[in-house]
Length: 83
Image 1 (cartoon, helix red, strand yellow):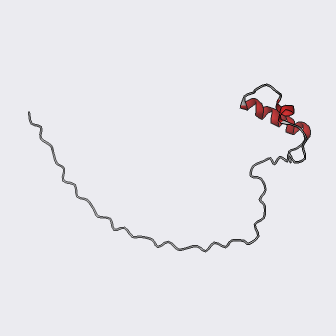
Image 2 (tube, helix red, strand yellow; image 1 turned 30 degrees about the horizontal axis):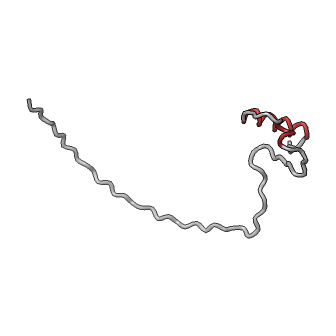
Image 3 (tube, helix red, strand yellow; image 1 turned 120 degrees about the vertical axis):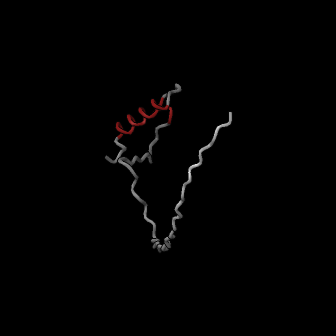
């Protein structure tokens, strides 16, 4: 059996594409770059701390989620955050 393919006559409209000219923007760069504040809510300063990693985390291996909990407990107990 031979199947007949129905051909639909489609008329394609040619769209005239107008290219928009891109204006070059002159970006003014400041010569003195100042330090930005930390993005987000907290900035923690560990400068001058004498504690070791073993003192903060303990000697046993722990999961990353437990590390995060212990870091935040340490930060809050020593009042190291800016909030």
